[in-house]
Length: 364
Image 1: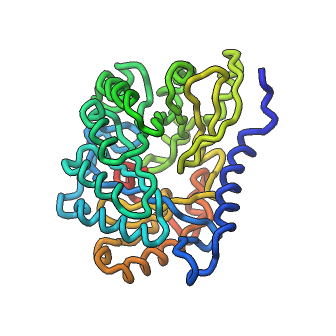
Image 2: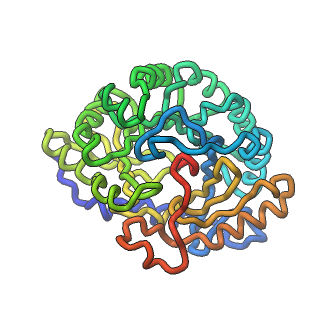
């Protein structure tokens, strides 16, 4: 068995350094480039856009059991506004777009939005994060519209547990959608698995086994303290570095791999496996140093950091590129160095406070 010579904590900093070094290699003068760079030198070429706050599930880590009051339709960005906004971002150096939600496939105009974005000059990568319930019907149209990559949320392979975690979802629909998507020439299909103690940490071995026979990237994601009471989060948090021990217990030889994409995942492959697995550890191993993304909420607010409350509305300035550009640079200028999710006492941070939004309202 391969003995890893690099600890997970060190490995997770390698991506950050790589992104930072790539950014430093770019031109630095605003007059010479459209590169978006924050005050710490991080280059931003990636936008996550939530196109709806609505969802047909009520996942326990995403929203309360009773659900949330969704935005009225007129408060959510229209398809035309989203496409125009992407055109603006493309002029500013953004080349990668991910559509999120809520559940983005609930938008009736999702295909028009996807096609419009895919046709924007300068946009080289378009991906979608989905719960997969509608993929059996929409996977092929999405690929035809220009979507290159899919992220499918799936936290368990047990139907009863899936129903509990999602508060009513049907696992068979997701697995069917995953099956259909796998027959299409998407560049990547990833499975997002949020690991929560007492809920699904006992299934990590099943997800690792899944990569042996399926050409997907299973990404284990640490449970984040967003929209969750602090004591509850602390009792349910599970450090995903335990995945390495599971591999050793099962005699699986694994090695680090390069896996193209925009995310902070550190990726590995079990010897002989068709797929791979990744670790996203925002709490135990911050990847903030290499953060290259901004987020737009469904109601048109730009967030520079997933965790903190800072945001500013772009909606009024979408049709005015100069005003739009000014707002984007203002938000980027105050982007913090890190999120400090693991800080036991958030009140120790004097100049910021955690976001009031739930994950479904941000887009993850």
